[in-house]
Image (cartoon, rainbow, N blue to C red; front, top):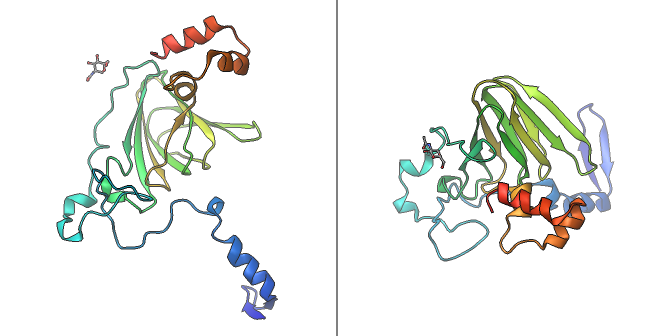
Length: 227
Ligand SMILES: *[C@@H]1O[C@H](CO)[C@@H](O)[C@H](O)[C@H]1NC(C)=O
């Protein structure tokens, strides 16, 4: 038996079974994101041919101040593309200093009328702050419920891990967002690109049936997305 004093001063008894049950439940992957680091830092050697759960660490003797800093998000991205938006990533692939730390950031530039199309991050929850512009942020749950809000500068949003979401610039000016993730490599499944521009292609019959349209519609979508 274990005895624990709770916040209201009462003693609560837990059976051994309950404790063991809690210990077993605690490390479930659904309750955590990237695993905790096993050392102070592990600057990713992104060129290594070895593959582990993350990148191998650059030798500590070769680590310099620059390894902990990154200026890749300082420049505005080029939004001249069919969506009118561009994501500049600050994950472990661009910023090896975040390797194994369970954290990453992006900047998203969106032209007026532009859209960061519906996508999901399979490995991370996302939190974001709007710096410039007027932004419609929407997310859809696994139960097909749609939640959304129009944000102005300084306002924030959160996207629970894995859920489909988007950001649309509904203002007259350029929109700028900075987003953060609880994974060093959140991954992004951009729904239209994932389904219509994969290599090799998803069979047309699958797309026709999934969206209940003719092949001409599939062809039109693919060509407009730049297939
Ligand atoms: C942005 O991208 C477009 C299309 O690729 C290109 O024509 C244009 O020169 C680029 N603009 C800048 C400022 O790099």
